Length: 158
Image (cartoon, rainbow, N blue to C red; front, top):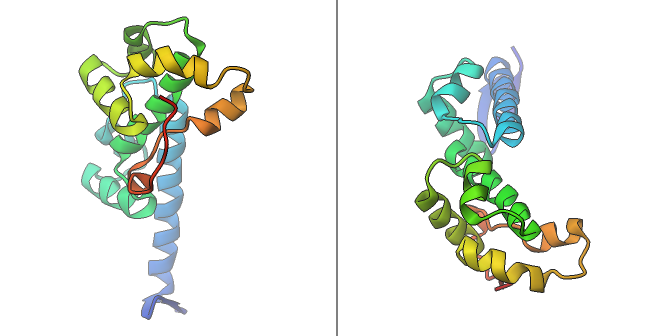
């Protein structure tokens, strides 16, 4: 049995192998969230998909990515909502349901938390702020703030 050093801790090779297997499973969960963000997803269903308990998945996901699976899912949904709102052809309510949210209130609260302005204000003002920008640049410039980045000062378009 080999020994591996991690931050002044000694772990056995089987423990390291398990850690790497868990990381691969967490990546599968993250990929599923990225792909199926508009579908009804909950931690229990995500955990079942990788044969983990919901609690273990939540703890491991937070340790690996710095936020809960639910928070990561909502960030994906808000990113997509921002793109749809920049297009301007859907109402805020239509965008809310298109990205997989079932509550306009929760959607608006999370959007405001991540973006800094309510979705209605974003929809109205972002067109002017990103006029003439290629879509790929507008997406990068208007990317929402994730939890670990929230303490970094950032200016918003609105």
